[in-house]
Amino acid sequence: MASDDKKQKGLQKSLALIFVYTVATGSIFTYVSYWDSVFFNYCGAGTFLAFALMTLAILPIALVYSEISPLFHTAGGELIYNTVGFNKHIGFLASWLIMAAWISVPPAVVMAVATFISHTFGLGLTFGTTMLIGVLILVLVFIMSMQDIQFLVKAQATCLFANIVTTVITGMLLLFSGHWSISNMANLFQTSLEPSGGFPGWVIGMALLITPFFGFETVPQMVEEGDFPTSNTKKAICGSVLTCGAIYTFFFFCVAGLDSFSNLLSEDAQNGFMTITAMKNILGWSVWPLIYGCISILMGMTASILGFWMSTVRMMYSMGKKNFLPEIFTRVNKHQQPILPNIFLLGISLAFILLQNATTFMNDFFNLMSFGCACAYALTMVSAVRIRHKHPEWYANNRNVVKGGDFTRILAMAIMIVIAFFCTLGQGRGSWISFGVYMGVGAAIWLWMAAVRWKKSKVMIETPDGEKEF
Image (cartoon, rainbow, N blue to C red; front, side):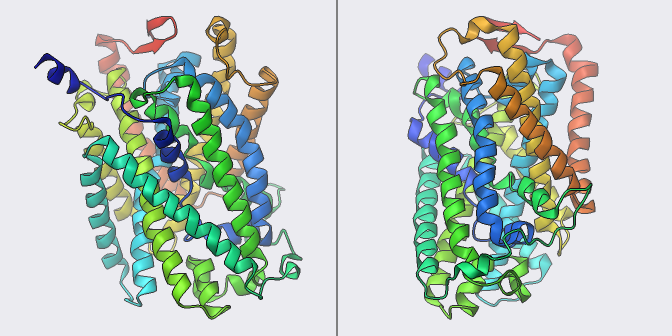
């Protein structure tokens, strides 16, 4: 009986490293089949180059995450790093910012799935009906997320690998379709984005491509349930970035040579499903676009929703454990799944769907993800530098210390500050409204914690020196 009571208290160590890798990779690798029109609008034929450059830009950040992740053995990631590096207020801000990116995914993705169903089967669903389908999918995801973690990660891994295999096959089919030509990439830096702040639209578009890479930071959210040494998290963090970066680059190289910028983005294609539409209209294919779309949209996006949903729930659970949120956020069900974080995430996802605009929600959410993620990364890089100097003894046995030391950490910080700045240039009115609503909820919670909760009880973080008060 005692062991059963203990089992009910919190998250359980049961995840193999491969499943933590698939959670991160599945979170990242989802946008190819629907947001391809967004990517191409931003970076044109040079989208593959933008992905290659963004992979190189993200790697220093991934390496810094790999360095600081093994220092802490509980879920929390940005919450822990920025509290230790700065203070609890910055810790709360950073965690709320990264969750802006994560929480944006479920409502955006379920709407993409519903839109795909309508588009593929010619249903002509109204925006209201599409939202209703999105709501039903969210409720289904919520029910799934309340089940055992082994069920969740295995379901996600299956969806991920099906998506990867189908995407690679599709790229090869496009490359050897007989319609592919290098001449279609003559205007490599064509973009639909206007220059802003003296910077070319293509550069701003490349900065916004941070969104298809965020997800590797979900690894630190899963370490509390990992049954492997935390030093191995580097394999999951960097492995997920390199896997997705290579596939993105290859796939969009294959797409770029298929036709001109204007033809690829003609008519309906500019609103999503550009590659699927091109296979139908340009190549005259009918069967493979349906197979690819169903696997990549339905299974790939399911993998992404589950990855970010699990990570958001665990971040909120950690905030409850460390006194950033009320203790009720730490209560779990019989499957050791946090109850209130799941309910909160379902509620805010439903609210985001209701706030969407029928014509701009895809870009609004895409840009919102980019900005929230970039800001959280930038803060975390600064904290990584501060932690290294405040506690050099913590790194004595850390085999993941970044090569180049402070140069690499500061480079990573500079990269993220620049990307965050460019992301502000790409934000539209809808993005700022969505971001403002979300940050308003966070500000209300933070004010209550600062004015009431933290005066009665302190923030406690488990560090290499033991549990410390902040």
